[in-house]
Amino acid sequence: MKKISIKFLSTLTVLTLVFFTSCQNKETKEETPKVETKEETKPAPAARIAAPAPSPFSTLEQKVGLTDVTVEYSRPNMRGRTIFGDLVPYGKTWRTGANANTKVTFGTDVTVNGKNVEKGTYALYTVPNQKSWDIMLYKDADNWGNPKEWDDAKVVASVAADVVKMPMKIETFTITLDDLTNNSGVIGILWEDVYVGLPIEVPTSKMVMASIDEVMKGSPNARAYYDAAVYLKSENKDIDKAVTWVDKAIEMSKDDPKFYMLRQQSLIHAKAGKTATAIAAAKQSLELAKKAGNDDYVKMNEDSLKEWGAK
Image (cartoon, rainbow, N blue to C red; front, side, top):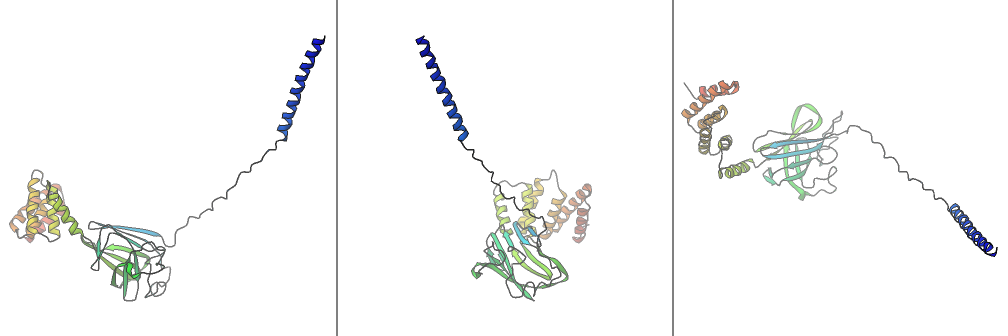
């Protein structure tokens, strides 16, 4: 009986301890406060209205000879305003457009008013006046409008350009690249009834002759001889060498003669004073042009044969 009592008391003690431990854990869990976290709300980005710019941006790209020229500028409108002498004052430096300064990028060195301008990007500034403008290329090309402090030392080249009055009004400010030759071009500025031009010269001749020299050191094909001869003829360079090279091109392509190559051979020989061989080449070109159905070359050859007194 005594043993059963002791065993019963031990079991009761264990159960009591378990009960109190469980209650304590429950109280501890219930006492732990819950931490509420609030999600941080960010303001919505401001909506932007899609609307046209008052002075839209424009990029002009033009190959002058072998030189890439790029003009980047904004184009304001007249909108009934008087431009020069009013909106754009006379005698003051102008950004030559709107917004950021107009930029001109040259892919090679160029020459402006006899001065070498290195390959790179420049700001285009002007000082308009009634009869002439000063047009300047400025080293610092990253300005919003005019530089905060003008530095004459940063003007790499300048030109005094005569004003040409236009017979009509140009509503939108415009920059062009015109009067193109192999060696030059003119950056034109037009707005209201005014035109002024900035002539530039490019080193095409130097680049082409270097290319010809390099190719001729190797194993030139018929096309290389032909291209070199035509260039010499077009630029009034060594005409005797042009004759040699075009004849070489024709000889190398005799199994598949081309009317346009024979046409150039006739012109080069005529320029060198070799009328008889010029006529012979023109007659061959004429017959091939007729077979090809190329009326333009037929007419050109017939006109040349008549000019050279062919029978």
